[in-house]
Length: 114
Length: 112
Picture 1: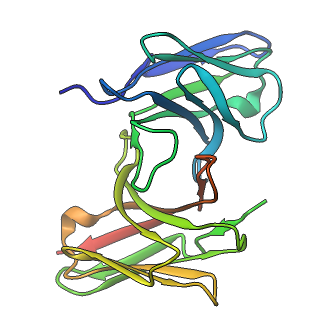
Picture 2 (picture 1 turned 90 degrees about the horizontal axis):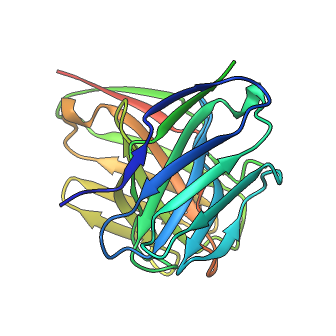
């Protein structure tokens, strides 16, 4: 029974480049959320998608965008990368938009911007 | 804005003793609180949660206490085991938007 899978696991990009991160939710889960975790801090909410529609957006610039596909997988795109975008990007899936229990997180994509 | 705060970056306890991890929040709209555990190179794993209509929730060795008037919650682990050594995150959410706000985490070390 596959959990939340994210690819790639590690990535090194140069400032100004663009990056696409991918997430496959647990089978049957229709909600995907993206979080950014900078070293020494807790995860910060970026986006939630449910049934292919954006249902929530955190305090991130427009350089960050995402989408959800018909199979409920999701992509997070970041344009014009800055050094400060270096972080662990976590994807979490859930059956519903609103939970009364915790998300299931993937292991994350470690993005390093140089 | 730090709406969820974990003021202790680290905690060390002896195996078999109680671990108490603390969390404070500022947003009175939060109505659901969660604890996650994170091992290195893994994503956070959901541990236990509590709704704002309760003041205690227990699951095996883990108990979460919520004090709404003080805007404070705590996670008790009894007895602590070496396998509990991890970073523990407190998180909170409000309303229908599934936007969890996380604290910075507390690194728990349980010594054999």
